[in-house]
Length: 482
Image 1: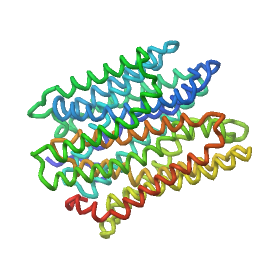
Image 2: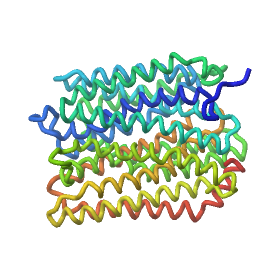
Image 3: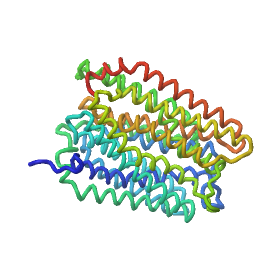
Image 4: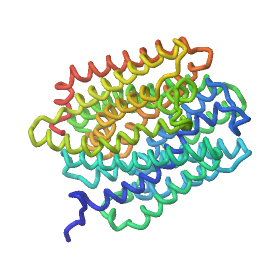
């Protein structure tokens, strides 16, 4: 029986599109107001934390969301399969947002953050893995599918930031958190209602693994909880330590897969090495990009003129500019890659990563210029941030959907979802650095802004140049997989 299609793609892609749309509405909507909720004062119904502590909490939470995709991928690969991981992950996310919506209790608030992080770790990598499974032939069509899937991600993010941002800033923070729970419920309903369109993907593994990995992970989480709860280490110090621990552990994990698993062939080992190179590029990119929710939100809230005909736009709304630009340009980029592929002119993946980092560097040069105006005593025009988000978007479209697709192509089959987890660990590290970076943006440190923005600009430019210069050798190690 011929598979049902829409716009040349399997219907299953659009089931995952709307499932992810609901999850991303909840995640990005809540994320849009989270940092403001942490730093705003009690008179605004918020927590009123200092910037360094708020940055540590935000960075640790956002990092945990993505780093937990690694055990989430392991659970799917070895125990329950991708479809069950998505279903149960979505339920845990929804419970987390319900807890966040309960006012007047810090215990519920932090329990909600933990719940959202755990659920997202279970869902996020696995839903991307299933998208790849719908296209076993690979090629440019899979890249196109991920660009369409990316539109679902950003449709949810755009609506979430607008609706949750408005409810949170103008009505009440917990109303915003509550709206996020409804969005995740929508995603779960879509996913459950159209299971027949995914019947050939995401099954439980035939041979199940031993849960030793999970026991070790649980022990690590308990140790972290004890250290923080009994104040044996401060949250800021712990988050700073994680900035080093995450890349070290990731390197060790790549080394274990690439050098110590004798079942992998030489071409597979080379591809694992290529995935590590892309991991580094992605981590640098996300460390700049994810400042949207931290540093750039502070810049929008304190130093940007947001008045439109006498009405002041919520600071969180500016974050939605990225998703709006994604919706405008996503289909354009998907068509562009397909067109260039037909002309044998499609840039290699490492070159696309380099282009993404060049755009990020240019975005931070724009921020550097805008911050110079602030030092002169003026508020920056909102156009500076809009241009920054446009450049972020152009860079993101060269890195994120391409990286997602590439990881599904190059990952050894036995590490399929785990490699998707490692891709999201790059985002985890970026969020962690972005949170810590925001801790430098206190009201007393305005003079440091231009230098901090220029620092990110130069690092992004340097890594982008390295990827562009060595794109051909890296492509050869991909073993003919485009």
